[in-house]
Figure 1 (cartoon, one colour):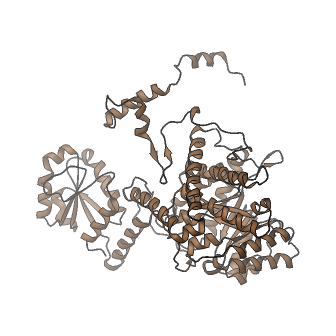
Figure 2: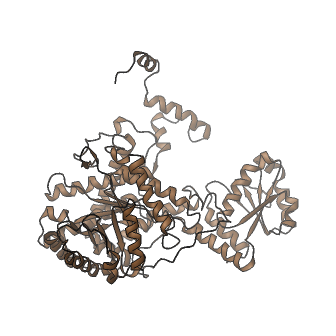
Figure 3: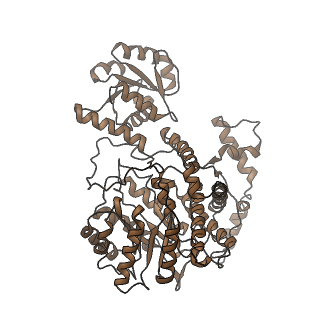
Length: 607
């Protein structure tokens, strides 16, 4: 396309973009906030805006062409993988998970999914899902040569694998059946703490490679590390270490290097942080391509990746917001180049998903594939200076963690010693602290909660037996526990705990802080009622919070606090950072909201 001369003239009228000029402009803004001074050197300005991810990857405020050198799609370093399909590009595999114990209901749901956009089936079997013996009934009518079947059976993995292999052999589809048997001894150890030998899984994989060419035997499930609160580098490093352990076991079982690589599929979590999720999948391909290179695998060997929307980010409260979270995560999975994607239904934290929620989950993918044409673009994030750089930085951080695990004896040994658990716990503590201080907000939970919401009812989901493996956390867990206490108090007394917002001055003066305080207290299930301090006694509350401007605080806060206590307030909070006589504590942006709410519920006698 030829650019009209007048447009070239317009562009020439603007000065060229220069990094130092940008720094000068940013410095001017930072001076007004107090973050910089006249003496702050320009070269330090970017550092003032740089943050790090929860596992230490730096996230800068500005990226330029100097920060990256992207490769061509489909070539080393394999971050920009391309999957050609005729004249266009192949969409990813739309994979739906099923965990309902009833075989007939599961079969009906599977067939409905396959008729409406789903292209593969992920079955949870055993204690947390469908009985293994019911597998043939659940798959009756499923064309396993067209719709891949992925098994996830935990400690029953070998039994489930043999049941499935017997089923496809009986159907005469041993040569054509597609899917993955889901053997994952190290992943099982991460979830349960029970050590599982690799040799039996490797032996079965050798048999699969010989007799069932369309199947893979092993899954490197890295979601236990994510579900325990780990960061992206934590998850990737553990995944690569597990994959390498499986390669060793597979080659020891007699498989060639290329055959061994062909038996492994990765499962990674993607969440609502779309850019880091995109970078995670691209970095995973880069890391596994490096392992393939040093292992002597064939040129072009890449990781096969199954991306699953994060369980940790899902909430029980205001579950409808989960649709938005999973849409962003699915977008990231598609842009990041996942081979298969599972969107978890929005109600998964409430029990077994119903027909409507499964429909929304699969249609989220259909919309991105068909209406948004996401899969028709070669590596949509490729060439973005930001994405390319964090992909590289994340890959380096994950590789460092992988080598640390290897020095500790490998993935199984690092799990047994507690090394992996210790690192994941440290990462989770950093995120948990930010969530508690609402620096990592959770819409509908820590921000903008809806106390009067009526949650949809779902059939209870089977629970995995308690074990000694890595913990399973949710980002919203601390706030949801507070809401549970409030709900129990409501059920027992007919009323929620209450805080009185004592407002000073006209609405224009107190509204901002009153709204902030109301939002904070309601995140713990505490109702708020607002009015002037003199109306406190009639409110029935025993805890108050002052809300106004700093100027009015200076004039009236001490007097108002004294009046509130004389009227029966056992405790007086203040929305702001000022220190005034009679004020017991303060709430402000960045305070530990969880600690504030726990204290307030205790003060109000809520157990």
